Length: 132
Ligand code: 5GP
Image (cartoon, rainbow, N blue to C red; front, side):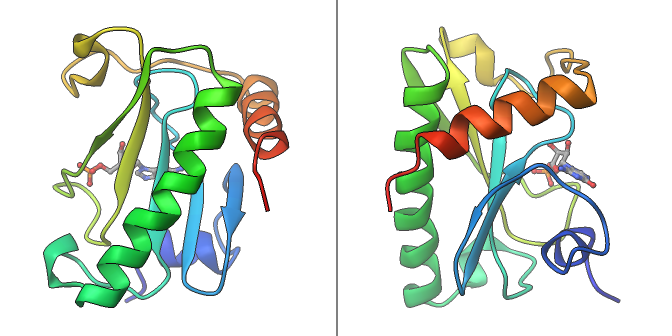
């Protein structure tokens, strides 16, 4: 069965999309730790990040870099933190989280409740900072 993230890539489940290319897809996390918290995934459905072959893994990291640069321009923060957990959704993904302090990337923190309009505005602001 297709993962929830494959369904997002295929447009079967809606998402606040940031960007995609032939191999990778970036979208806002629906339960964000901070405004702009997003996920970058390979379109190829692989559960465990380190099962990706070298080319797919390095491509995912480099794509995440492009997204992180735009994210940092869009959301005032000190750094973009990066995390991989993968305990909930069995489709490899990188979390990118704008950080003001180390604790902002603690996944035990309460998640933000944002309105549809807030998610849409955040996604728009990040997309506007993407460099082609
Ligand atoms: P992890 O597998 O890294 O432990 O957690 C999966 C992440 O995916 C969580 O942060 C969760 O909020 C996010 N997530 C789960 N389902 C959806 C969904 O349907 N849409 C979006 N945008 N994010 C999701």
